[in-house]
Amino acid sequence: MALTLELKKAVVTEVAEVARGALSAIAVEYRGLSVAEMTNLRVNARNAGVYMRVVRNTLARRAFEGTDFVCMNDSLSGPLILAFSGEEPGSAARVMRDYAKENDKLVIKLVSFGGRLLETSEVGRLADLPTRNEAISQLMSVMMAPIAKLVRTLAEPQAKLVRTLAAVRDQKQTA
Image (cartoon, rainbow, N blue to C red; front, side, top):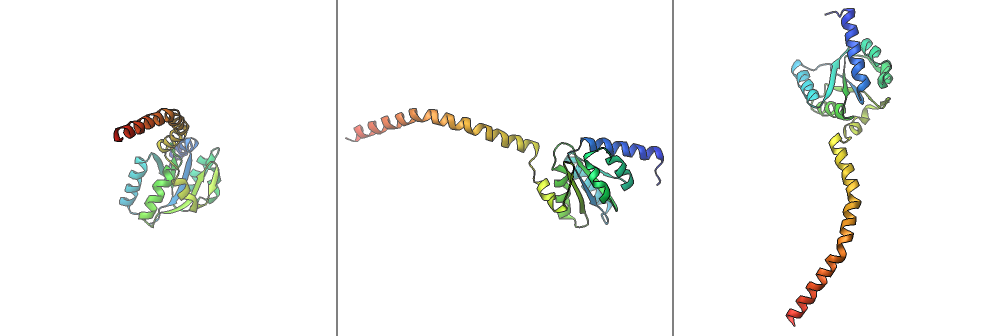
């Protein structure tokens, strides 16, 4: 089905809006995937908060103008799915990496993060970035460690006194 000019403009506007707010983007080749496999991939992406869209490469190039993903323009070729991570930088990479492990027909072609085009081998590093909740948890544990150590240090003299008195009591009871 041929797209009208209005539909093309709408697609470019939608993808550009998502790209402006995205933290990372991945382009994967989906050649050979069945409809059921594509549906499963879309469900996984939706559950992870990943915006996924099949867009013509020429429309994607127009949509990427003025965004951090303009670095992908020269490498867009073939049938590609564009996946954008909006909330967590590694969510799209995680979904695509995990699905590519299950299905060898899905091939990761482009990875972009922070305005740079990364090697496809680095998708694992991007996917292994902690989620927002994991990052907050790690930060809180790092911030809490000195306070916990201070509390243990302040409580130690009283604990030592109690242990000493208990040892004296036990010694007098045995004598």
